[in-house]
Amino acid sequence: MYKDENERSFYPDRNSEDVWSKPVRAGKRTYFFDVKTTKGNNDYYLTITESKRRQEADGSFSFDKHKIFLYKEDFDKFLEGLEEVIAYMKENLLKDVPEHTYETWRSSQDAAKSNEGSAFTDVDFEQL
Image (cartoon, rainbow, N blue to C red):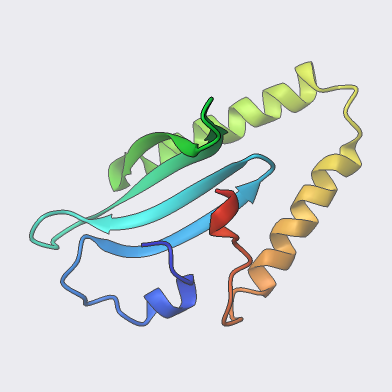
């Protein structure tokens, strides 16, 4: 399901629940932002999945996954709440974290956006 997002975007009319996917690597975690259609393909919603690789006692690997569903009527309120919480944390709880940390993060996000037209996504599925 997590193919290159550019390849997937050429097939919006596929008869499938999965429309588009964007994996985001963040340290030991990977977040997947998946656009899906409802049954009958008459509406869209977003799932956000956190996936973290875990090694079992026998040496095998498994993944802890947590998922939320976000519907279009909640997009604005969700984004507003997320921005408010992040601003609060930066102003009140993360005062000792240098601002350049956020600038570096923003720069990496901007670089990722500029690479959206490339044919490949840098995701190593063995490490998920």
